[in-house]
Length: 560
Image (cartoon, rainbow, N blue to C red; front, side, top):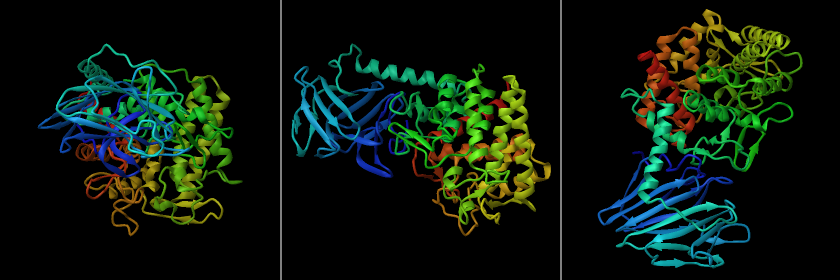
């Protein structure tokens, strides 16, 4: 079971979910049927009668339970839902009360089959309710314009069953030979098979592995809009996009058991690479943003993927895409005469408001240099494998030059500083971002690696790595990247520490983050001092990071 307040009820491939979340950080009293086509849009408000119910959510079945009876809901597929009631009624009402020429919902009865069809401006889709058994006690707002109460109500006190479908302009009348129980059992079997592929190693020491798998499975949508591949959204709450670094962690978590889906996740942003070689900031059903970028962790991620994929994919086109993305940084993000690349804003780093950016924002930072070095090294390995020795030499030379510049110009005493790309002025902060070069692992000089490890340990609270030192005057418990614990920084640092030989610290960071997820779920981020989940509570990179760390822990604990 899981808390429907935190995790939406959905199904692999579906753009629908059932949840109380109807907008960013907005929770309705009733559950809603929500669609993510063109964005997060509540379509129906679902109100049981009587109303004092207990809601029970499992991966295959959502139940409203009352002493008088129950209502049950299950997915028959990505775009069809079955709902049945026995003893309880259910009122299904349009979430938008007002129909205008540009928004809202219209209701009509289809003369072909008698179904009730709601058309929704916000999603550009239709929602058909077909009564399979029983008789509605009320249908209101049919063909009404303007403001009206548009709803269909099923009665309490007698059994009933309906189907709800999301579709475009037209489809054949609803027809199914499967019973509700067969629909529910098929959904359960589909999810169970998915869990077995991506977490066959799970044990009592990894008690929320199955729930982490559900977060990924349920956030996966079929190709639609700008997403031409199956996509794991960051959430089926309001973070219903694919950002161009978040996707890497989902790909890594899926790689061993769902290699095709994993490879799709890695490639998604590259499908929208622009002429300069840049990846978009994010891709959603109906939106692609290029006003920022995300950090070049893709060489690191590709190495992690290749370590896990059961078969090596054809890498020629991936090499070309990764090369173009790398050349973007080398060509468009280096000031004349500079070896080090720069960010233009904190959003480019993925650490939007980190204190590293509190002064000058157009800065050369060690984390960016480190990620680019890793990417260049990966490109050199691929070029060698693809028999392109000239490319391999070029990438290696660029990596060596950036590494030397990073250590020469940004390393001061026992820490890395940032440097203005315009003036060369240096600045330091208490952000964990300044310690991310540990991702280079064994490539760092031993003294630099040791100094970074010592500083990383000062960020470690009882729950994990705070993104700002908790005794910093800039620390904020719910400060986004100015304090809370985040999954991606945890995984990158844990991996770098382990590769650098700091295994005890890596083990402790892994343990604390896993324990945090087991206590507080898979939130977007967590209060570093209390461990409370913050912001979006069903975030896939958090679930993926748990699976990455849990799988590695289990393999170390019980090596085959």
